[in-house]
Image (cartoon, rainbow, N blue to C red; front, side):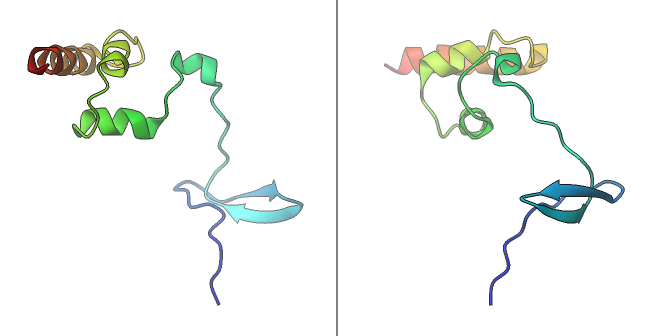
Length: 88
């Protein structure tokens, strides 16, 4: 028999309601509004850029302008986009 994992958190335990059940969880999380992220892609898309699995120049250029990333991260994205443009 397989059990579904509802959540795995690292924090002090707290009781949370989920789908009509009370669960003991590592901590409460609040959803982040998509508008706060300023782009339509997912964290997985960003990881694909960081680990060089994505060659989407438009996405990479957008990431290079986002204030959510530190200057070093924005510079990494800008270099990656420039390198991909040269490869074409």
